Image (cartoon, rainbow, N blue to C red; front, side, top):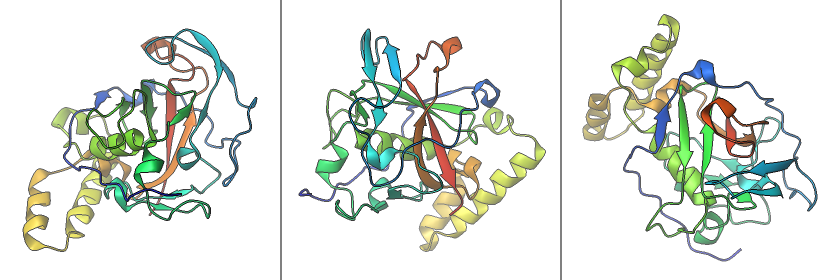
Length: 239
């Protein structure tokens, strides 16, 4: 597939909201898709979505192949502690690296203007919206928006109260992950700078930083006015 290599800016912003992990549902970790195949037309759950997601309509919704969670593997090889452009595409009919063409494609079919991502390892909901001014900018959420927002959200520094949502064992593991992370930085100056920033959200994942895709949360989260089709579960694996 033609296209230039894409560059993702790595400056963190605040694209997510804080929510207690206890409020998260526990959907299945085993979505039905198999790698290397696109979902045929007519398959997938029938959903009724409301604005600002897709407007009030009935639709079949599926996620882009590169973002789709599978059983223990992903079409995208990405350590989420690294910039998204470091991700390696594992599909034989695509370039090995992300291109402008790939990241400009809709994250979901039909396209949506907003989606929420949750993870059993994180006490935050990450909200993804179109990135204004990006090379992959579109009036809907693209593959690039999902990857870019995940990376930036996980680079945010953790506050004391946020760290306090973890029990003692969880806090210890997050601190250990933080130490391992800054020690991996080769340049001494950059290592000291990263150390000084303290614990980041990526450290809540400990060693489970490998992106395994996202899968639909059946039923959404009605208590937070997130309809079915608007919420997706982030799957991860140990690096």
